[in-house]
Length: 88
Length: 413
Image 1 (cartoon, chains in turn purple, brown):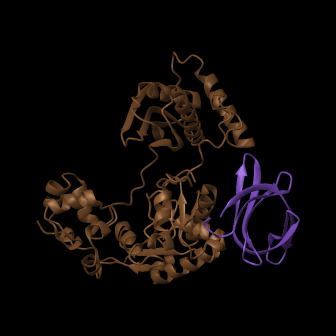
Image 2 (cartoon, chains in turn brown, orange):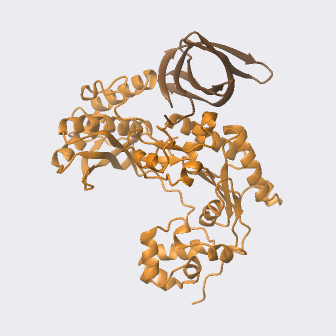
Image 3 (cartoon, chains in turn red, green):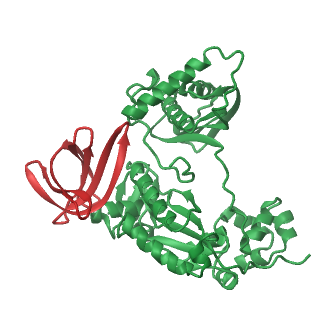
């Protein structure tokens, strides 16, 4: 079931100069680390002048989906929502 | 009169659409949803209407228009989600970018479908197979949007046959209809399988003695024009069915509008007025962003008892600012008869003309000030985000009217 979270979280991000891509690597939420697995979709959204990067991804165990928002005006990460892949 | 022959030209029009667009993008974004029934609904409340569903959900009967309660009755474990328009617009842009790598004659028909005209493509003229191009596009779409995303590709001598071909083998199909196999394809279909023929048109065709697509193809022009369609549409269908192009006209923008399905149905005019203001603001933002002025407005309401009210008005003065739109829309709302709780409402402005050159009215008074204020408010909202600066009527209305995806027009994308 999808749950709206909207909490700031700690994120480790890496940049690969060879692939020319920057991606989240590790999420720490509620004192628990989640290694990032597959990135399902990435897109950008502009809110006024501010660019936000939205990453939708699953953890390495493939049990939890996360929607992360990187606000480029302050480089803060927000965990917007989670989903366990179930209807209820 | 001799019949117009079937078009045997090389099929060079491609119709391409994303399979179950919104649902498949959600399944791409969240791998935990893949191979599961997923329904995208306007609201995730029981009465919320399903606007898209995954192939797994469609197989269970969860189709466009059923509500969330019905969807859950059909499949208890259906995953219901609200739409994410920004993500779908992003997918549309990526999809379009892929297609523009092949030719610049790419026409978006909606957020999830495009028509590509290869008649001017040098590679194709030199003999490159359009079927190979179709397979390449499928691979490129996967690379651009994600490995779970599939598209239907249809190739034909005109837009109608290309679209028909795209629908033959869903999902992930690739079919060609040309003069040689056209009759064989028609033989396998029913009238309502043809794009643009719904049950009402089917009844009209049946009344004219036409019961299959083959009957339709062989129907004489006078029958279609004078008895069945009773208009020029009969001639258009006569051409379309034979593979001649009649749908290649891209009509310009005629109106801007917004509609809203009320999450909380109401009969209270004060509440409706506040919602109306937000619809007017959204409409006004799009009107102004595209440098238009309107001189007509139309308001419609639909009610819980399945009745409908609508009224339009041509205005003497130009409509430009949100306040202009709201003033006229509110006047229309004041005239509305409201027999039951309102379920949906919409406002449209029409009779558009460009903002420049500007015709100033002798008695417009402070019109320029209104325009300047609207432009200033738009600049503030461009910089700080939508609804940062709003009329007082709209105070505390954040998230009351959600961003939606227009199914038809994608001209603003």
